[in-house]
Image (cartoon, rainbow, N blue to C red; front, side):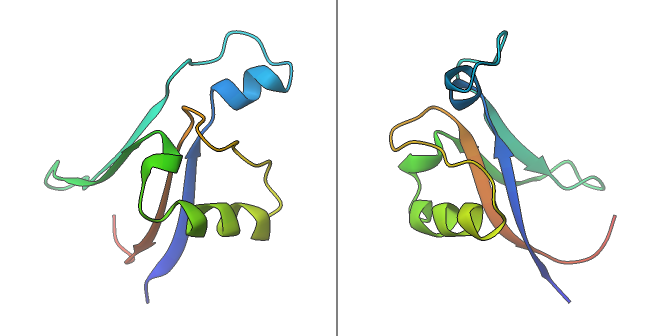
Length: 83
């Protein structure tokens, strides 16, 4: 049964929270381990068509929010079980 998964790559927002040495513009890429094929990729979470769903999922798990226009990365995916 597929599971809904939120993956986040925080960078600039961590800096705003006082963390030093953060990535300025993180990117996420999820690969199929067996084939190496790209399943999904994101750079700048708010530039995606599912930005509102990512924001809702973030709130539902109690994570800190990414501001609109930030260069943080995020993916919201339905993943099937497997390797």
